[in-house]
Structures are given as structure tokens and as C-alpha cells.
Image 1 (cartoon, rainbow, N blue to C red):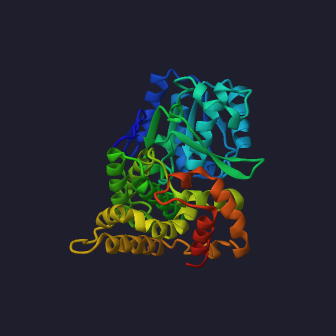
Image 2: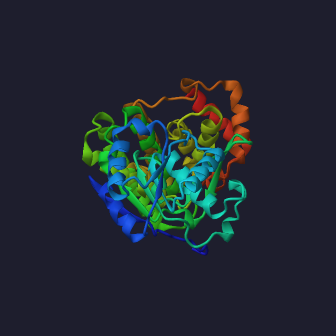
Image 3: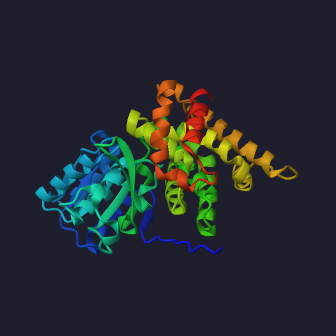
Length: 386
């Protein structure tokens, strides 16, 4: 209670089937003349891209530009290339379309527009203007919640590691959550991104920062993912499940304004070094980290168990925490998530290098139980053989 916490939520969120029509309001409100649509090449062939492009052609006929060069784990070079496209086409705003990678790249692009001659990782975040060029974020997955987040995760090409760039002006002015844009997401990606949302919410909940508002949001996000991720995984056309998962992803990102934890420090090198999808990496690492944190986070994990519908009456917090951890492992099985690092091609002799990278990642600094490099190596070993 002696710490001063912060809660910022300025993003205008529009939710519902067909909500992409709100792009017209974004155009009017921010006097957008020529937006740059930032996405990845894989999305260009999808129905979601077609629906949004059709809407943009209606709102900006022949007047919007495209950048489709975002990689699955976006790099600072991607952002530089996006800046070239932005300047070449004389754009005045950004529309980010896709998963967390495209949205993070789009958000980072706005920093480069403000500081075009400064390397991305050297931009002075404490000197940012109060607002950047206007951005509308349109997620086509339900995991990162980047559409309402104040950070961007970018791989530093020279170092081969992920860096988290965080500043309130990075929050998009508008986010459009349209579940119709997620119905074609294949089951494996539905599962992985859904577990990303679950990891965000659980790590935010146990982060040792006093923030009851974020805690309440995290708990509801956990409940939603538990109830609706299996439905979205089994039936991609279930619009209610798709919409609820979009909401849970956004809520998870709002909750981790508190911060994240060791699972993210473990998952970031798995993505930057080996290209493992971020949500999938989180899914594999979450259970070992929950076990590691149990001795200091049993009370919070007991609340997680309650969100899962587990009857915790008459049992200890430790027992309730164990049931929550078992339930997360069971959810991973139900949606066919790989169980171990071994299953996704990681070799045991690579774990030491990964642990060094994980220790350099700042997320573990807000883990409820402190982590040394050896602790992180132990967690990798647990994830390797589980």
C-alpha cells in the first residue's frame, strides 16, 4: 500500500461482429488522409485481410498504402522498412492488422515516425510527444492484447534477442475487436494465442505490485479463457467464443500493466532464437513457472482455481494452487499444445544459452519469486522433460 501504482486506459475500444465498419469513424475523428496498413505477408491471403481491405477501400478509395513485411517475430529492420513505406507514400496514420507481431511493429513504427533518424532502440522514450501519429489496431488473433497495450516487443537484429519497448504514447488511439476477423484462425494458432492470453492474466495476477483493478481484470480474463478457449479451438465459427477470447486477450494486456513474470523471460528467447510462436512457448513454460511460484503465490493460484470452477471449500491454499496448476496442464492437453520443449525441437544442450538470454530479459524481475540464471535454467530443464 506504500507504493504508487498507475492505471492508464485511454484506448477507444470497439467490439462486435462487423466492428471493422468503425474505421470510418477513425478516419473522421483523426482526419486521416492516407493510412499505412501494416501487416504480414501471410495475412494478405486471408479472408480477414480481404474484409478489412474492402472496408479501407471504401473509406480511403485508392488512398491507403500497405506494408506487408512484418516477420512472425518482428525485428527492428522490419520497423525501418515500414518507415520507408510510410514516408514513400506520404502517410499520416497507421492501421495495424494481424496478431501481436503486426500490431507491435505498427506501434514501433510510430516511434520511428517521431524520430526517423534515431535507431529504434535508442529513441529517448522520456522525450516522446504526448501523442504519436494516430493508430487503429485491428487484431486477427486473440492472444497478445497488443491493441490496448503500451509496449511493443521487437527483436534486436544485431543481438538476436527480444526487447520490450514500453511507453504510454504507444497505446493505439482506437482498437477494433471484430470476431468475424478471427473465424479463419486455424486451431493450433487459436490454441497458442489463447494460452498467451492465459499466461498474461496469470502472470499479471501474481506480479507483486499492489493493483486491485488489474487483479480483478486478470481474474475475469482467466475465467473467460478457461470457458471459451476450448470452444473457439473446436469450432472456429463460434462467434461468441471468438469474441469472448478477443475480450480476454485485451483484458490480459490491460492487467499486465502491473507487469509479467518468469514465463515470459523463458519464452522470449525461445521465439527470438528458435522462432517458436510466442503463445506456444508461453504454454509450455507456464506450468513449470506456476510450480516454481507456488510457495509464494498459493493464495492467488487458489483464486485461479476458483475461476476454473474448482471447488476450493475446505482445502488449503496450497492444495487449491496444485489443482489450478493441474488444470492449466489439462487445458494444454485438451487443445493439443506440445507438452515439452523437446517436442518443439529444442535440444538439452541449448538450455544453458537460453538461460543466459532469459536472465537478460527484464520480465523475471517482476516475478513473485526471484530468479537467478540457475533458477531459469532449472525451469527450462523442467519444461524440457515435463
